[in-house]
Amino acid sequence: MMSRRRVNRLLITSAIGWLTAVSALSAQPHEPRLRGTEAKAVCVALGAFQKLAPKVDLRHYSVYVEKQGKNFHISFVPDQFPGEFVAGGGTKYGAEIGYVISHRTLKILEQHFTR
Image (cartoon, rainbow, N blue to C red):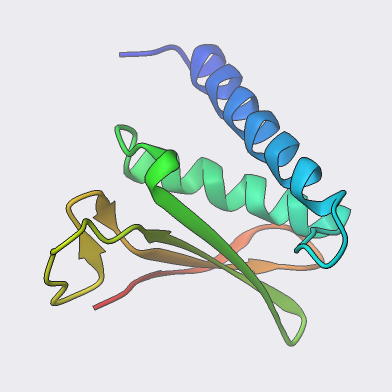
């Protein structure tokens, strides 16, 4: 079992890598970008997602960020394997999971598994 400090370090490293990739994309015109609060909300959701599915390879996921009222809805959606029939909220890469994050407190309000 990993120590809490090691888990936190891994979460921070993963989040920094992901945010670096998003920053590189957002430097190009007409590309999606995140505001600072959205990036923080993604980090909160990413931490919860990696606790739930620690072995998932994020290279096979897309992350969607939507503002819904005063909250953020962040979804981790797995890629579809070529020729794979999807009959639910997951693929061979893992499950599709969404989080509702409070804009004000940056705490998880809800967690959703897609069917």
